[in-house]
Image (cartoon, rainbow, N blue to C red; front, side, top):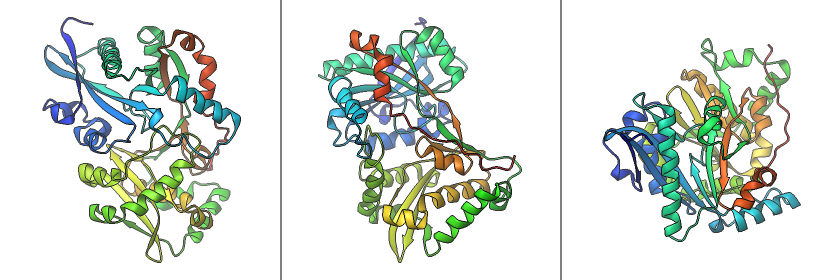
Length: 383
């Protein structure tokens, strides 16, 4: 590492230098406010640390790390009952239960780090790599030996830089794509979106909207989120546990803490039938991008009312109306998201196992670690 460079690992956002947010100006997920959410309301099997890189004692780069203890997870996901899913759970439990991420395992996209133009990319990432080694040593000294080190969710340009020299000993893998909905500059209303859809998908839109008649959508404030906390968590947990694979579950107070910290940048929408909360979705304003976050619903009503599809349309229409450039829909329900216009963006990661024999065969083992999803990409637009 360059002699003028150093790094500090923070265990609390209260320890941050005053200018931390100056570096996070283009990514809300690296701001002190968002990282405070992780500190105050993390999943019970997660420990977050925050890395500051300094040049001549000046903060020039920041990053997030997350340690996950999969032994504390009550369920890896209950949807898939196949042999492959059982093998995946066995591998994680017995050989990869302690995972150290450089990045954010709760989000999709490059939310691992940012740095100023006062430091070269290679120098910054060298410091970051040394910080990851120091974290692994610190956890080992606490009796938590790291099994798997994972640098996650980078675009193709960054992954090429890593592969050349910085992470050439790590296994490069391709995860499920991040689904991103791009909003053309000329769109100003819901009608602009509907007008460019093929007839089949316009009909889908109309059918979904008719099905949802009687459902009332309402933005909830902090107190309302707190008042409905038990129902909100039940709706979230129902969806989460039926995912093909989980590495964490949110804390019960996560959404209220989120609202407290991010205020108007965090939007919580409840869906009500006869005054009963039957579903919700959440959005995060991130510059000109709108990031979708966790949601929940009553599955029996969801199917009848096409509630999930209506949520997607609501997010699209809101983001168009407010002038956002894109919506980050993340990496679940790929096919239905493509049916409303989201497109897949390939994301890459790098992993290394601390067991040399396992690491040597990591490319073969990986197909069990990452659930493969077969899906057909849809194109709802006329052109």
